[in-house]
Length: 256
Image (cartoon, rainbow, N blue to C red; front, top):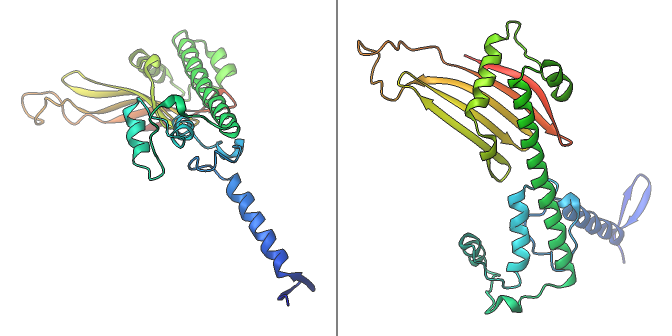
């Protein structure tokens, strides 16, 4: 005998409900961002499962497919990480590690995703370099048409000067990433004040900043030995978005 529920004047068999519920949760979980590759031996990965992952996440998943087959890593951090997993058993010879067809397809898929993300990073840096050149050359119309950028202050002499100063200090060839974040920051201390110049990237957000921070670290006190008298601290931050492989200026934020 089957139990029945009454809903909207219709009788629904409990087995039907149970089956639909299982199917719903199976589809929902498979559509969520993947957390590990425990199913990569038997299920092909879908794009929606990796949409929110960064290059480091993708590389770890790729290596996990090999690790689950006993691959021994030369990279000590990977070896230590996978060695801490209860499921990891190192093979005596990496030549004996063989992936099945589904795993091979998943590895190829993940490598393609990683390359796409790396290409996006390269494109972002290329556009930042081009933006820098246009700023240094005072190409106002090109900045507006290409990046939707315009100086926001009515008297923009100081803004122009500070933005050019930031670009003279930061090295766009030396931005390094950790997961979804990238940064190059340098702090100058001239014995009077400290100034930080930064380009900071997080996901699709880019911030370029000039930060007039504080007094020099050599100043012990505001006394007769220095002309420093608690200078006003302030910061200019130019904010951008990188969407659809295109750099867009959003706003200038000024603090202090």
